[in-house]
Image 1 (cartoon, helix red, strand yellow):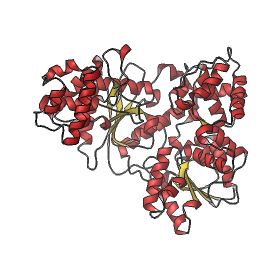
Image 2 (spheres, helix red, strand yellow):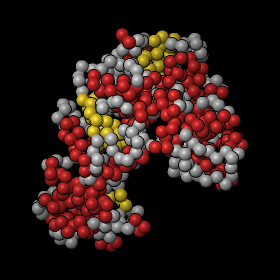
Image 3 (cartoon, helix red, strand yellow):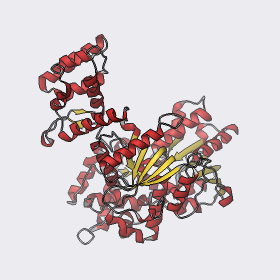
Length: 574
């Protein structure tokens, strides 16, 4: 490589991103501007966070658009170079992504031509769906094509790709290699590209780097194609320096072809965690949590614990009620900690487990939400109607409705009520022309001054007390969870908003932290045999290690449900 390359290793909370920002500050002090730097990371949310931090700390006088252009994903950097070279003209028209309903027709045309079953709602970024053995064959072909492109492998290697993805592709019934070739030809004929395709395009055309100084965060998450592109840019004479940061112990995207060895084998000067005696200190993870995390990992981490002790416990609530009490206790503890409000994370290996936990909590009356938008909707948006077969398209937020009913039951006529809560109650109790008239009257009243409970009583047929529950035009389980929520609030004397309890997968929580993490120990029974593979077992250790190290004060190993416990968690907080 011709460019100077620095690799900074550090575990959870060690300040990898902060260190890269300091490297950017050094470059800026030496005269580099925003056009001289290309800062790349794994996801768009991480790129946006880096942009905000660089704007505040390094380039406070720079135009916000210049900062945004400087910070992107590796995919984004490759796409920009393809655009500059004229290889792609219109990303809006030419770039495809599974799960994008606007492009569903493009996929459907191909699938229909080959009589392949296909679900257009399944996306490429879902870490569980990509490894399901029961995906429609068309989705499996698309997943295989993306994996093979990301790993720089030919279609004839599809069986190895299927094994890596956990797919059961029916090769005896379908000519998979021919279908992969046909899918590639279909895209080429129409000038279409999936995300991995334009990384390959930039690589194959040996396009120049996006700037003379390259900064890559979360390098442990790069695919072989992305790694090859960075190495190719490093060999270009116009590239002066490359800074990469990462942690091989947090490489958890094997289903996308990522391999921690890519981070460790790039020829670079090592900084950060260069050995047992030179590990950076985590600002997040205290000693007991770090000890549990290293037990999961089965080796020392690339970080030393901070000076807090922390807490690690093994909890086994046998019922939804027991789970709810455990979460309430976690929230109560988090509220005693200094600083801003601290949400509690409940993390599961798979979406199936996360969904079961969210359902149980909601039924017991504890509001919750997902980390990724739309994952947990029990409290954010449900369709109106009592019968599942005859639901309206209109939606209402059960949490907003819960707040409205709490005011409705406790208030007097002169008490003000937020307009959004009043609208939720009107939507849920009235229908047809009566609802339309009430909403119109409500909005007129809101323009004149505060909406009061007396207005709401008048619009919904008079003060009905607890009979208001009977008037709710919602499915019984929604009414029941609102009932349970209000009962729990009366018992504990405080609210728990849905954003205080975040239930999702470990992958969704990567890069985030919470004061208290409940790490679900459950595993899918049909995936246990996969752990006989040392590579797969090592990745599962890294996944649970990432989950455990989201916790800054307390880690609870949570046994809940009927599924087996993941074997890599044996002996942790026993």
